[in-house]
Amino acid sequence: MQDTLLIDALTQLLADHCTPAVVRTIEAGGATTTLWQALEASGFCDAMLPEAQGGAGLGLNEAFALFSACGEHLLPVPLAQTQLARALLAQGGLSAPAGAVALAGVASGSRAGDELLLSYGAVADWLLLGDGQVLRLFDLKDAQREPLGDNSLDARVRLPATATITLPSAVDLRAQQALLLAAQMAGSMSQVFARSLQYANERVQF
Image 1: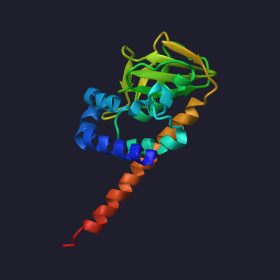
Image 2 (image 1 turned 60 degrees about the horizontal axis):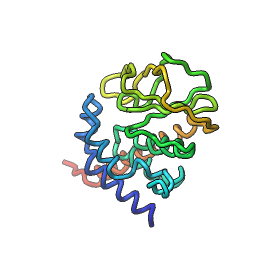
Image 3 (image 1 turned 180 degrees about the vertical axis):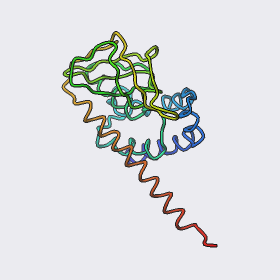
Image 4 (image 1 turned 135 degrees about the horizontal axis):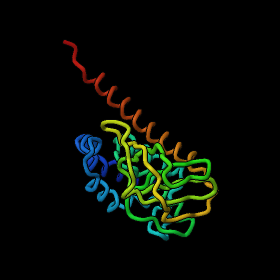
C-alpha cells in the first residue's frame, strides 16, 4: 500500500510540474529551479533515506518504480540519482547538500582537471564520484561544462580541484547508476508504448 501511494504521489507531482513545455525549456538551457524546488519540497529526494532521517526507507528494489516514473515523464533533472546519492552518504553518517546530484564511477585515481562524460552534467549541482574504494562529492557550481549538443542534459565536465566529502565505500557506483538508467529507460519505453497504443485505438481512417 505504501509503495502504491508513493508512486501515485510522484506520478501526480510529475504530471503537475514536469510538463512537456517544462522539459523542452530545461533541455534548451532554461533554469531547473522551479521544478527542483517542487521535488525538494515533496520529500521525494529523501525517499531512500531511513525513516529516522525523514525518508521512506526505500531500497533499490522498492524505489525501482519511482525511477521508472522519472523516465515516463522524461524528468530533466537527476532525481533518481540524487535519491541514491543521499542514501549512500547517509550510510556513511554524512548529510547530503541540497541540490541535484549526478553520479559517475571510475576505476581509481581521478585527478583535478580530468574530464568526465556525465549524465545530467548540464543540470546537476553536485557530482558523487565512485573512485575505486571511495566516494567523492564535488561541488559543480563553478565547474567547466561542455554540453554534448543542443537540448542535451549530458555534458563533459572537468573535475574540480577538491572534493567536499570523501567517504570510504566498496559500492560499485557504475553498476548502481546503470540500474537507475535502465529503470528510467523502461519507464520511457512504457510511455511510448502507451501513447502508441492510444493513438492506434483513437485513430480514424479517412
